[in-house]
Amino acid sequence: MTIFSAYNDTKNKLREAGIEPYVFEAKQIIRFVTKYSNAQILEKYMEPLDPIKELFLKSVVAGRVKRIPLQYLLGEWSFFGYDFFVGKGVLCPRPDTETLVEVALDLVGNAPAKIADLCAGSGCVGISVAKEKPITLVTAVEKYDAAYDFLTRNIEKNGAENVIAVKADIETYETNEKFDLILSNPPYISREEMSTIDEETKNEPETALFGGEDGLDFYKIILDKWLPRLNEGGSLAVEVGAGMAERVKELFIAAGLKNVKTREDINEIERVVYGTL
Image (tube, rainbow, N blue to C red; front, side, top):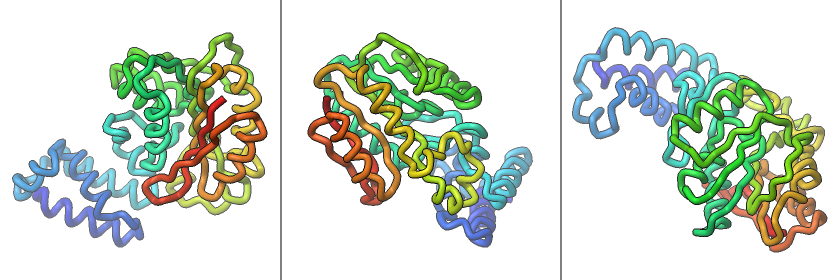
C-alpha cells in the first residue's frame, strides 16, 4: 500500500461511513500516520507505507467509523498553532473555541496580566494565550482527574511555564487572588440538547458538556463566584453555544459588566460574550 492508495482508501471508508468532512479527516490521518507535511506527502505519495504504520492506520479508521472522535484516536490535536494531548475524559479542542483565544489576546493587549482559565480541560485556551503573551500569568482551574492530567501534560508539552494548574471545582475553590482577565469555555449544553448531540460528541465527557436545564448554570456560577475576583477594569470572556449569546449578555449586564459585546466564530455564529468590570 502506497501513501496515495492509503489516502484514497481512508477517504472512501470515511465517506461510506457518512463522515462529512471525510477529505479533511483523511488528510489529517495520513499526515499523522506518516509524520509528513502536506508538501512531503505530495512528493512521496508513491512511497510504500510501512507495515506498522499501515496497521495503525487501519485501527484509526476502524475507530473513526465507529464515531470515536478523531482527536482521541490520534491522541493529540492542533489548536491555535499549538499541539495538545487529548483523549477520553477531556473535551476535544475545536476551531470555534479559537475565537475565545482571539478575544483574550485583544483584551490583554501588550500589558502584563493575571488570567484565570476556568473549566480549563486540556488547557488549550489558557496555554494558547500564555504562549502568545509570555508576560501573562495564567491560572488554569480544572476539577476532573482525567482532564487535569491532560492539562498538566499539555503545560509541559508546550513549555508553558507561565501557566499554573489548579485542581479544583470553580464553584468551591477559595482564593484571594485577583485577576485582570477571566476566561472560560464552560459546559453549556442544555438537558434538551443533550438528547440530540451527535455520536462523536457522546464519546466526550458529559461533565464537559452539560450546563444544566437551560445550559446557563456555569455562567451563573462564574458571575457569582468569580466576578468579585476580577480587578476593576478587568474583563470576563466566555464561550457560548449557538443561540445563547443574548441570554448570556443579559446575565453579564445584570451582574454589572459594561461594554458587553459578542464575537462570531469562523461559521459566523456568536461564539464569545465578553464585558468589562
